[in-house]
Every structure is written in C-alpha cells, then in structure tokens.
Image (cartoon, rainbow, N blue to C red; front, side, top):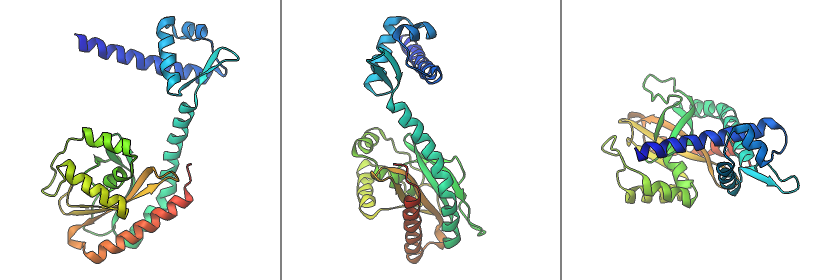
Length: 258
C-alpha cells in the first residue's frame, strides 16, 4: 500500500512538472506564484516546493524584477539537444551509404538510450550473407561495438554510475560478463578509439565501432559495421577501422552541435 501511494505521488509530481512547463511555454511571459497556482490548481505549498526543486536544477528561473517565473536555460538546452540529435541522423545518412559502399557491409548510426544503445539509422549490405541492423533495435552497451565505444567515452561520473548498476546477460559464449573485463576493454577502447564485439551479442557477427564526439568530447553517437565472421579477417578489420574513422571525422566536422 505504501509503495502504491509513493508511486501515485511520483506520477502526480511528474504530471505537475509537465503541466508547469507547458503553461510557461504557452503563456508568453513570466507568471507569478499565485497565477501559476490558480492556473494549475496546485496548493501554494506544493507549488513552492516544486518551483524550488526545478529552480535549483535550472529548469525554472525566478525573475526578481517582476517577482515571477519563466522557463530556465536547462529546458532550452534539452530542446536544443533533442533537435541536434534529430539533425545528426539526417547529417549521417550519406556517410552511412558511403561506409557501406566502401566496405560492402551493413553499417549503422547508434545513440545512447538510457543504459542501452539504439540503432537510429542504418544501411544494409547488398551481399547475400549480411547482418540486418534494424532501425529501433536496442542492445546492452557492454555487448555491442557501437555501445561499448559510447560507454568508453562517457564522462567518468556517467560511466561509473553505469558500472555500479549494470547486470550482465550472456548472449553468446563470448559475451562480457564481469565488470573487470568490461573496464579493461573500455580502457583499451578509450585509448585506441575503436571498439570490437567479436560474436559477443550475435553469433557469427563481428562488430566494429567508433564514436562521434562533440567538441567537448561527449559521445553524441557511434558508427559501426556488422560483418559476418566468415568474411572477417585482420585485413578486413584494418580496412573497416580506416573507413569508420574517416567517416566519423568527416561527420564530426560537418555536424557541429556545440
């Protein structure tokens, strides 16, 4: 019963937060505490706590001259980031086509989605034997090349939080299943700039991934190739790395979100 009550209160608080954002976005000017309370039918004491919490994180800004509230820079930053991520997909599409043209293998653009990585754009190989990288597919960060290379380049606080909470699932005999092994790989990836997944998520598939970094070094996405293991060789791997690095570098220069 207690847990159900806490869940209901959390949902109510989330609804109020969204209602507040929508109200301030549509109002067109700052709103006083009393105006917000009346418009949203929120008790003034509850509204005070909500405004204090959101103000502390930059989502709401108090304007002392008018003694009123408006949306803060954190909301605007989130909106810009959402637009930028969509723009990255459009910007990356010709690069994906070029990667597949040069390697004859399937490739994808991936982005962080919680504690997973999501395929947000893909181009498939035209060869008979191929790996299908389907739009919207998600996978654990630790299991695929496109996820590992993002994880390796995350800020320390985000990576450490992931390592504290991650639980491993064995997908193949090669899947990483210990934090020690994962940390060792992440250190190597951070140094080399390239991640491999040798049949760690899908049997018979070798993944190679590189990160797309912002000017501040944050991984805004990754490019990866999925190569059937029967076609993979050391020479294939070297060539794949060259193509991916070049594409990521050119995409990084063309796409400047910062």
